[in-house]
Length: 548
Image 1: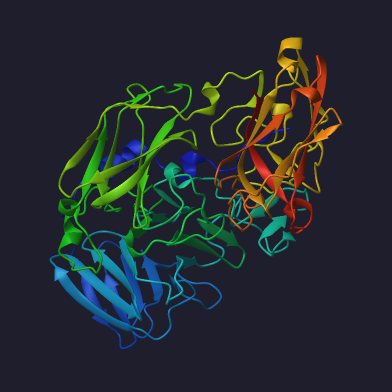
Image 2: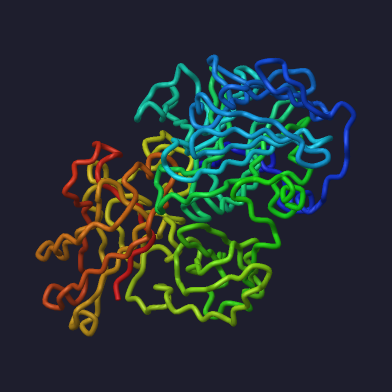
């Protein structure tokens, strides 16, 4: 069975077109009452538009944000801050430009900034992380309990039953909730938050150039229960991570306050950064110090799929969607350097090459011909589509916002899949060693097809506990156990993400083991690791399977 996501994109996210217009619109308004005071313990900043916030002198915590007379900050006696709080820090305040108040927090090698602009109900945040000497993987805005709804997949009740690692819960009806179930990839959203009748509070994400994981990573965005709620911006999200941590300046990311609508001012700084140039932030590079890539097109596309072009090196990452009609793309705001450019069909890398970007210039690329799409190979049979995701398989529609054990999920066992009769929706999106071992495929070969060695390909999206497929053909021949692919060491499949390092296993089946007529294939999840048992046992997500 399948079920719809409880999240309404209309409720949670505003239109991308409206946001793009807003980001491109410079803010010039000033407001009476704008400025700051010192109450002896905090710097108190008044935006002059309805938002007053406080930053602690001693540790840089955001200890209060009062919007139109209502305090929204804090739960459990805790403030909003980097990680779980920096502790003793050097905190200073200044007005580096007209209509801007800037608070600087220095803690060891880490520098964190809060900025306010006159007439805006936004708190702009920037975090410079130089190394790992300071634990700083996130910023959390803590929100008071009882204000915002707890009806989303990433919110829960304190009375719900813990079913995994103290952060996945089951309700009485067997449906599941977790802070991990935001159900959005980074490329899918510009801001995320909570909305109530009196106010909405949003985190507008940064451009993520110093984050890791690329455009398709799914991060913890919020949580909520009767004890309070939280909104997050991650500087480095370790859950299911595929890349090393990057260092430098993250931001601006923004805590934005509205009366229920989506953010409507130029809050992100991704398109309107001129005002930031004057602030003197450590690690900041303005528009004049950046370049762009202009691609003339992609040849060999399958136009039934979306394409994305990503560029990344050890210091930064960027991406852009490819125009579905023309195949053209522009990746903007890139720091100078040499990058690996990757073309993704869906989420599957189908082309890579190196490209160099220069400040203040455009690097133009001629039409790229895609040659790395496995779907271009002629197959005797194929289950699923080569796109880097389990889309179309059984339960694939819900795994990003529910635990695999959720009562709304169909059985993970699937009987025998019959080539030519069964549809992709009968094949499970995931295979778990202790849940659905021994998946079966029945297929027919002609005498000519059975007379030659055949290659079976199994594409996975990620794996848990070194899980990888081992095959048996016609109950007589079992493949060698392949080496485990390099995949994230943390949970993914049970916390809302199928994403890892897409890998394809290939098995050469000797002709002597094939039959003219009906053949059977058995697939087992194998590993030298025990994993955590059940849905945490060695496992992997499927991309596609085919026989060449």
